[in-house]
Image 1 (cartoon, rainbow, N blue to C red):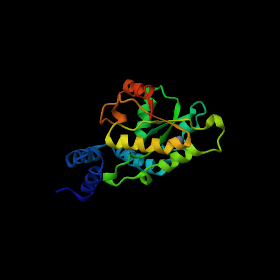
Image 2 (cartoon, rainbow, N blue to C red):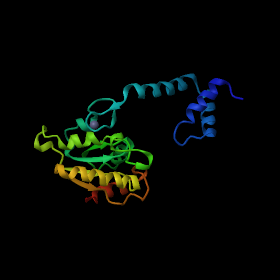
Image 3 (cartoon, protein in one colour):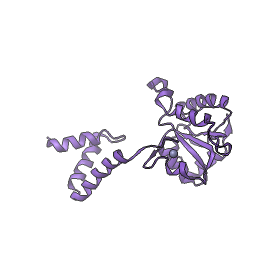
Amino acid sequence: VLATPIARLVQQLAKLPGIGEKTAARLAFHIMRAAPEDAAALAAAITEVKQKIRFCGVCCNLTESDPCSLCADARRDAGLVCVVAQPQDVVAIERTGGYRGRYHVLHGLLSPLDGIGPEDLRVAELIRRCADTSVPAAEAIKEVILATSSTVEGEATAVYLSKLLRPLGVRASRIATGVPIGGELEYADQLTLARAIDGRREM
Ligand SMILES: [Zn+2]
């Protein structure tokens, strides 16, 4: 039987996505054998991420500074916004190196079966951004690229948002289905993702 502190660590690690009981135990024993400074650095990194990271007031991405560096970058096209489900998707699209617009992070996808509705996502923030008439015309949002995955939830979210955007006079486009069906953007390779954005179609 495990000593209580180890059992507690295993229990916490097992809560992480993709980590089963066995892997959690292996990680816990690895941490126990690690140098004290390495274990302390891991604990400190976890604490720091919770203390310092917040939501960008503009794009809702996770950031240390508000507005985030992508929203604050004047060289990026403010008229073009790419809507993604998760912060990891921003990382994946940035890795392609070809996108020069801004982003909006929903933090999830519509999923009626799981009880996830628009109010659970950063939808209101997106609509407010698109309807904002206080910004100079050059910075007004002209096109929103709906870059959600080609899963049922991803498609439903894109259709839902396109209907909200149309009355605002904002063009809604959908990334090409070059992204493998059911695949999350995060796992799409850089070339496929770049092509999916370039090949987007108006909805
Ligand atoms: Zn931002």
